[in-house]
Amino acid sequence: MSAKFPPRIHPAQSAMRAWAATQPPDIWQRVEAARVDSAAARDARYYARHAEICGVIPRRGALETWATDVALASGWSAWRMTQGIYRYDPPVYEAVRSTPIERIPVDVLDTMPEWAVVIDTPDWAPALTAGAPCPAVMLWRNTLMEGSAEVLMAVLLAGRQGEIDYDREVLVLPLAGTLDEVIARRIAEADTSARLLGTAAVTASEADALRDALPPLLNLLLYLCSQAADISGRGAPGNPAPVRTRRDGWRLFPAPGPRTWEVGTRMGAALRAAYQAREIGAEAPGATPRPHVRRAHWHGYWTGARANGPARRFDLRWLPPIGVGMALGDGGPSVIRPVK
Image (cartoon, rainbow, N blue to C red; front, side):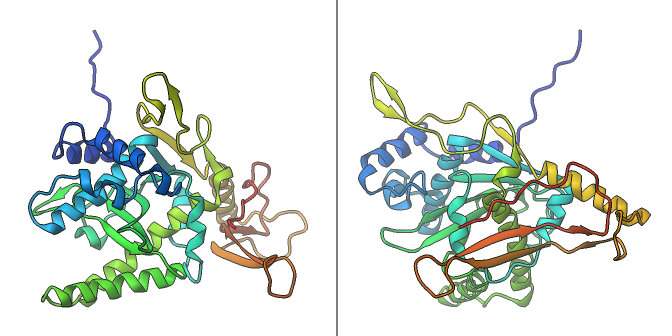
């Protein structure tokens, strides 16, 4: 008789279940009911806004604890509907993470594939988690209160480490301007919050931890927004469509379980070929430069009429490490979809 092993539980599943266990047993139904009651004011970019669900989250402990629970309710209830886990091809993962991130408008995040996404982050032990391994991160967008500006939220799924449970720590990034400004603003607001609470300002090491962690996370999310053609799995990622029921009318149903999406598979094959060609010095027919791999970078450009006007738009593309003067053969990267 063969031994039976329980299925491996993803850190996101464990964190979601652990948080839900601290809430009323019908927490998901409460969130959905609050969401439906305010359907006329709902923004399709979010599963449920904070202003809609704050009344159904029980107050326990300090105000900060309750506010964190509201944020986690918005994130986990959104992810529960799709349960998408995005797993990068290793070469693409490393290349995307290390891409310089500069003046990229925050509007590109409008094309997130789902309300909330979980991205696997293997071999990542950021200073933000005191060097503890962080195998995955969840990211979603929301608004903190009615009429307030949009924010990007993230939970670094590193579990409990000593006195801190990182699965209950929500990183909030106000979204305005460009993404390099988002990073600077987050550091400045952390400093301001510390001063208002009467504690010491953010230290240089803490500021460095934010600077080191935020660009890779934003890059991994940006790639999902601009590279939908290079996400493979059964079907395509997306938010669920309402289903009409006899008893309750139109309803949304959560995903039955996690769905893993492979990211950058075709581009990863091309990058491996490029790296191998660089190692052996294989030159493409007629190539003049020495074989090398050009660093990945974001490339934005204006399209439309030359004069400023409504026809003008800014398109953003992620350009992978490009093999120059290399014989890569077939199976190169797929066409990159611009983010508008």
